[in-house]
Image (cartoon, rainbow, N blue to C red):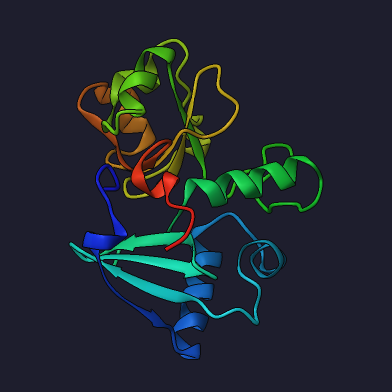
Length: 202
């Protein structure tokens, strides 16, 4: 989605969101991400700060705070954090500055899947991740009791790497990824080195 993105050609305009729209988005973030109200208010989006909607091509919406992209949305899909925001939250949680709500021993604002080393070069080129990258040695998927359904926003970690390398949306449930073991498992929405990663402000 951000393999080739330029504000000069791909942004149609910017709008400060109304208070009612901002309240709705706050509620959605708390429902969709593994965070609590304190983390949202203190670390991600302070209550007194107004969110700006940056309208992009192909029904892409980027939400910014003081010019910095925080998360984005395609059509009416889920809100997807930028990798910079994901890394910031995880780093501060690891340092004990904040406690995220899912599991303080695994500080993430999104559920995480892991691909093996062989998939890394394809991932960093923006390719969607195939099932074997998760099921082979070096890949990791949740246990059956913690299985994820189709359509969930996930962070993609890579074997031997400390931080998430991409964020995507599951095209199969994690149990289907194991049983089918072919085809696209996760559609990649943003990855390290893409134009959203390099774009610090809009």
